[in-house]
Image (cartoon, rainbow over all chains, first blue to last red; front, side):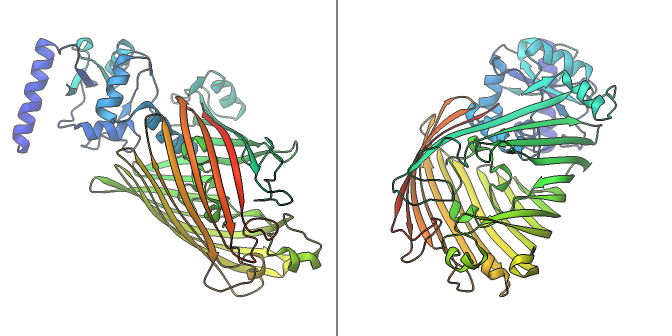
Length: 144
Length: 366
């Protein structure tokens, strides 16, 4: 798929998601409506959440927020985007935190709290269940 | 991870602007290892700590607390305190205490007290939860008695395809303590020293480079460190010890692998009596069955480039099980068979044919 095609698909996805909403089981990666980045991949998101990258592919600085480990979205994000189980993630962060290299994204609770925060933060990045998406945030990626 | 409102209080105490937009508080993280180990033979001590009397206040037991907070958009401060199970009451040390400056998205500069990465897991050596063994293979990890420096390092990350290359130069100074080995004991008797006695030394210059390639399923790293050592009583003045090492860790489809090799090379002068040339290596292989990680390790310690009658020579085989019984809490069980070379003490205080070491530990992070 060439880049124009990818962008067209991303555009279509955005229109579809904002016009018709997103089905419940899907996880939406969301940013502030003013966010200009396009073509964000699952790997980009995973790198940001694992503290390996501080920017979007276009160089824009990003601040990601997490959900509490009790939330269903968190479990879904862990398995589908980070592709780790809770123990592996814990061990990953133990190495990074205690060697003073990085700290994990802060946790803001549930879908509603994350949406509100992202809507208010131009550099923000979060994930929520598709049904929480509205015009206050921009969908960057859908995780089926 | 706990965000504590105390942050503003501590910020104020430290003279920071509590009202700054990024002074969101101080995060506190911690880790704890409590362990008990018993040697299968009597009248002998291993690693200056383990005998046939099982003890909880051994060198493995420790509590670590880390405090970190943002100073402003580009700077943060981190301190890590460690309280050890052994060492009397004055046993709390500061392992890390540094200010980190984000000079660029890919560049972090840290200054203060830092743990420097001589080996693969040196910078999280104290965090038992983060690795499979009760204690990392001592055939290699005992080679450098200094693990922290007061100075500066830089963390520079370069993307290499799908992977990230971390380049970490560091420079600083520190003091350290080595312990008289079983092989040194007869020669050091003239100084009034016996096996296990501490020798304090000074390392005015510690300089090195750590290069780590972090890829999806693991890390490949190489490191080099040069230490300048002073120890007046031994007539050591500005003599050099070099450490070169290479290591690999892989976590792929439930297969866990650690492999590492290190070489300590010192000048052929007075320092060779305190720190003879040595090599150390180990391989660990494990397989994850859900929360259970059984693993086996073979480790060896040999003389280095220049043969020395003081060099420690031993091999060991370790069979262990790490059981993550709750998120953030692991129980470890280990059986280790240690075999010094003939007429060598290895890391025991006296010549012995072989001995088994049994251990259990609880490792948590919070």
